[in-house]
Image (cartoon, rainbow, N blue to C red):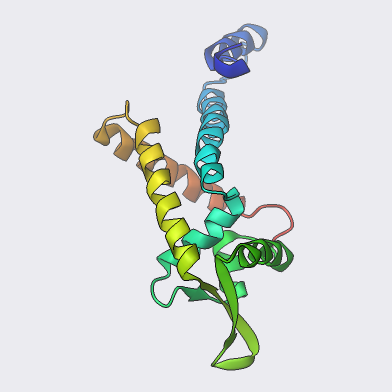
Length: 176
């Protein structure tokens, strides 16, 4: 086992090379490491959200509203699309955020049959603080990667993501 109970990628590759020398397993290494990075970074990122009284999903809703610009409102469908969520999943998140006073539902002046989700001043203050802490945390987590390497990593991840999307693997199960 490696750091934090995660299996050592090099050890796994060596074992497979010994057990299945007929297979070229080098592509497995980056995927093991991506999974490990995701697990470790997710925990570190989640701690920042918790410090600000948020869950990851709530943070995502608030950042979507905040980056939409004034008047910081979106329809539930727009939010669901941005976050790749079902309408039911979006409703649960909005309900929790509304109860906390971070968002409010407003009638849509363009269509009185529907409504908008709006960031409240309290919600804006919370997400501005949480997002600033989140960015500082990401800088801390990637401090040992020089800017050039971060750029290369971003290009590689963009390429891989594009390939996966082209194969139709970008949507979580249950979403159209």
